[in-house]
Image (cartoon, rainbow, N blue to C red; front, side):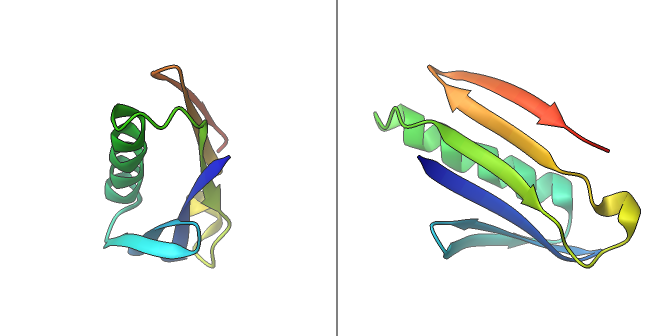
Length: 84
């Protein structure tokens, strides 16, 4: 199972990584999540039917920013689940 991780480093900085490799860095969580979803979509388009799980790791940011965000790309459909 592929795992894409969005790590919240600071209030204004997120990293998107895949299998311990950093894919991109972003100044907002929204941009980081968008990049992670785009990467997962490319995997599917390239014929990789592996389920992609997107997780939001707990970071040192304020409690209001520590939301766990998870999604799976299965058979071309995104399923989202988020916790506040």
